[in-house]
Structure formats: structure tokens, C-alpha cells
Amino acid sequence: MPELPEVETVRKGLTKLVNGKTIQSVIVRWPRIIEQPSDDEFCHLLIGETIESIERRGKYLIFKLSHYDMVSHLRMEGKFDYHPTQDDEVTKHAHVLFKFTDGTELRYLDVRKFGRFTLLPKNGSQTYKGILKLGPEPIVPDFDLSIFSEKLKKYKKNIKPLLLDQTLVTGLGNIYVDEALFQAKIHPETPANQLSKKQMTLLHQAIIDVLARAVEAGGTTIRTYKNALGNAGTFQVELAVYGHNEEPCPICGTTIKKIKVAQRGTHYCPKCQPLYQNSGGYSS
Image 1 (cartoon, rainbow, N blue to C red):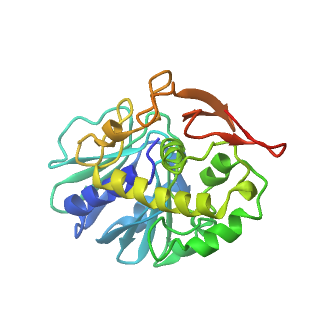
Image 2: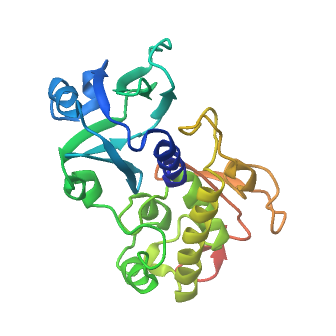
């Protein structure tokens, strides 16, 4: 699944490819991809719209058009494919085709058809239901340590699923939560309100650092994911625990374990990330 670094990489690629282009026509081949308005109205309203910029909020892409905001959520397998001409064969997984006045074309592909597009009035993306619930972006000064720490103290929920729900900080998916928790030396099943002040500080720093490095590397390529330019991300070579089940920890050499936390495959080092028990002591 594309996470924040992958979506940010897509945003950068699309900005280079389609920023400033004017839409001549739109073809929707799978109507359920369009959340609102109807697919026919979606196609009609986009005619003549110019892409003024492309922004990102969490894992959402926001196309800032002349008169509208077009929100795109890639979900599990969504991706964009740019074509210098409109004559290339259209594959079966291409569900939305944006044809530009200069003869180029942008296609949205989605094997599982989980992705969605929503067309809103100009600057209306700020009120979109999925965006409204998002926490701050994982950058300074948006992501404030004191606010983050105070919120953590209010939850008995395990730290991993809490970070995955996007309300404390946005953009963390399964891969980057595992990496941030490892860097901060926190067991993924630690209740949030049992974290020490030092652990909260380390986690805050780790979230910012891991996501920044992943963005710099163009994201992580697991299986077949590629960005809008057709390039694979390279952060997978920097992953310390994710995908390294039964391999030695890069810090202490202990065998990395994989468990299920909130139905998600979770990688951690039993020695570097001990689980604190209320009864006293630590346990793996």
C-alpha cells in the first residue's frame, strides 16, 4: 500500500509531468472510482480545468484546479501512468483517463479498484471527510512534541494501532510504524499511556526521521509499487526490521520476530524493544 513517502513521491512526479496542463476530456471506465459527484458530472465539470498545483495531505493527493479541488486516494494499489500521446493501448486496469489539450494523457490504474476520486469546490478539500480527521503532518513545527505527548497519555491503546489510525500524526502506515518503533526502542504492544517522557521524545524524533528519509529515498518498493515516473523507491534497502523476520537485528544481533498486532504483520526486536509489564520488569 502506498504510504506517505510513496504518495509524496507521486505528488512530486505528477507536478513535473502535468502541472499547468488543461483537461480536454475525461473518461471514467469504472464509475465507482468516483465518490462524488456522479461519474458523468465529474467528466463534464473537469473539461477546460487547468491543473494549477498538486498538494498532499496525509496519503491524499489534492489536485488544485481552476475552479475545483480534486481529491485522490490511492488506497491499496492505485497509481498514475503518464502517456506522452493518447494513442497508447489502454490496459484493463486503467479506470480514469485524463486527456489534455496538448495531446498527452494521465491514466489512473488500480488493480483492486479501491481508490477513489472526489471533486469539490475550490479549496473544499480542507473539509473533505477523510482529511478532516487527520492529525498533523510529520514535520516540524506542525508535529509538536508537547501536544503529541499529552495525547499519548490519554490512550490505553497499544502504540502501533494508535499510530496507524492517522489522528495523532498522519502518514504512518505499517512499514514506517515498525521502523519508527524500532528506532525509538518501543515494543509495538506497549500501551500508549505507559510510555515514558524519554520514549515519547524518541518516538517523536523517530517518526519525523524515518518518514523524512523515506521521502528522500522515493519511498519503499514492496512487490510491484512504482511512482508516477515509473521508478521504484529505494528505502527498502534501509529497512531495519520490516520484512526481516528471523534475521539478526542490525543493532544487537537478536533474531527479529514477526507477530500480529491489530491484524497487521508486525516486525520487532525482542531485545531492543522489550515489552514493559505493569507487574514489573520487561518481557519480550
